Figure 1 (cartoon, rainbow, N blue to C red):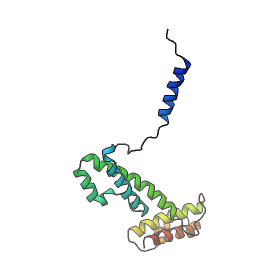
Figure 2: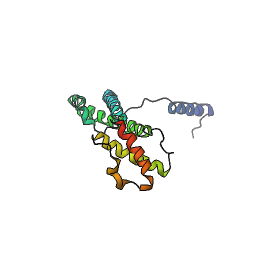
Figure 3: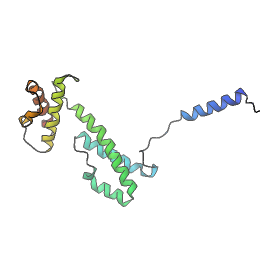
Figure 4: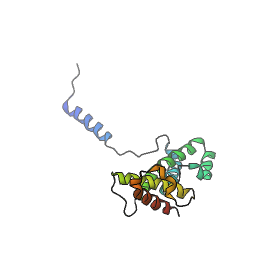
Length: 160
């Protein structure tokens, strides 16, 4: 029967605890250290597109993607993975920031209709359509039309 001294056991516990608290660099989930540059470039490009509320489409940067593909398939996959993450986060932030002056309080019905109007205005503005919220009249309850209209106009104006 083996016995351990408390001092030896305590040293092992301290060592294990110290290893668990060491900082670790964060990397893309499927990308090794060799492909971090491609991942980070994708994140940067995705952030720019998302901040401008463009659709999630890394192919608009196809020159960069094809350059990454020439360097190997994993590089292109890392670029696209980074792009998607960057776009998702920036798009969500941009959507929140289009509240505009006079936007209703978050969590109310009025705000829900304002946000719906903002989404419709964004789509129409990006598509180059004229500013006409009435084209979406089936999307809102007429009692909340002023909120839908305000959201639509605020976000449509962002693209003009």
